[in-house]
Image (cartoon, rainbow, N blue to C red; front, side):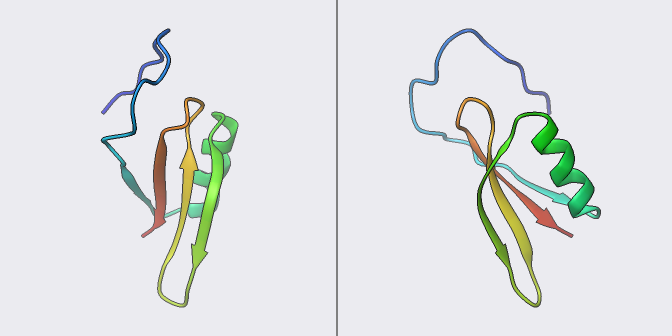
Length: 66
């Protein structure tokens, strides 16, 4: 999967909300933040951990510890 920046503004609600799974949650979080992602929500329980981010255009995606 590849993501490309386009000059047009977002015109509608996201129809695609990817969930990305990583074995190194902290490192991947730092990488996403360096790429201009912003944290929207975080959830951590005894059995699960994930963070919802937005990309620079406001599209949401989740990072899940796995």
